[in-house]
Image (tube, rainbow, N blue to C red):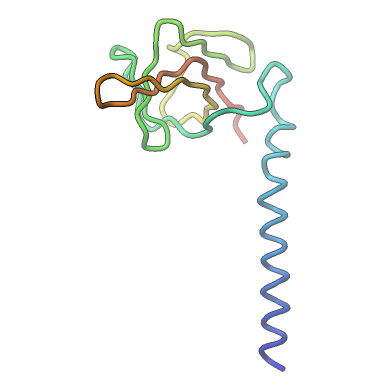
Amino acid sequence: MKCRYLRQMFRGLTAAALCAGLLAPLAQAAELPGSYPSTFQEVGTIDALDLAQNNMVINDGSVTLTDDTAVYSIHGRTGKYALRKGERVGIKYVDTTQGKNVVRSVTAIWILPEQ
């Protein structure tokens, strides 16, 4: 009897967690300005930023900015100097091979609104 109750409770919690996980992206998408894309290749927090070297760390992964990297805020297109450590961003990128290394170059960054 106790096992059946625990199984039912576990199923209910699992279903609730699954629904919350599936609906969370929809809630975030609804908060984005209409000029933002509906999906990004990666979403994360800027952990480190070195604009002089065109380097940024998002979610513990290093990415390279180029002179052509487009940066957008909720007010429209801006420059890379609008980026701040700790901000949540959505990015689109291309991976290129340089020798044995793969370099991730960011083509566009959207500064996400605070939640």
